[in-house]
Length: 164
Figure (tube, rainbow, N blue to C red):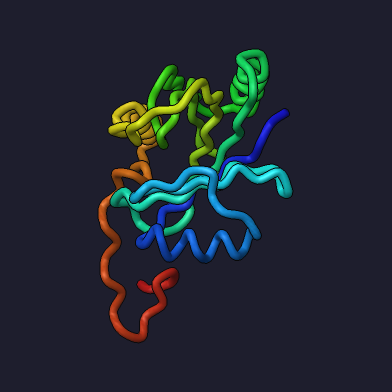
C-alpha cells in the first residue's frame, strides 16, 4: 500500500513539532534536532519537516511504497507521466536508507518516489538528493528548491508575488 509523502522546510523544528502534533493529534515517530516525521494512518501520509537551510514552505511531495515491486510500478507511472526522471538509487536521507527517483510535475513541484529499506543514525549529507534534483533542474533550465538563490527583499508596500 502506498503512502503520500509531504516534506516541509521549517525555521523552528520544536515549534513546528508542537503545531503539527496538535494538528494531527499524534506525536512524531521520529524526532531529531533538525527533523521530525509523522507516519499517519488517517490520513495515510508520511509527513516530514526539517530545518536544513532551505526556505520555509513546501519542499517536495512524494509517494512512499512498501516493496521493491511497488516501487517498480510507480517508476513505470513516472515514465508514463512524461518529463525527465532522475534515478537517485540507494541513498541515505532523512535518517533513513532508501531507493528513490525524482520528477518535477508541470507546475515545477519536485516529486520523490521511494522505498525505505532501513534506518540511519545520520540525516544524510544530501549529496544524492542535490545531485538528482540539480541534474533535473539543469535539464529544464531551472534551479532546485534546495539550491535556489535567496529571494530578494520585497520593498515595503509591494506584494511579494506581484511586484514589478
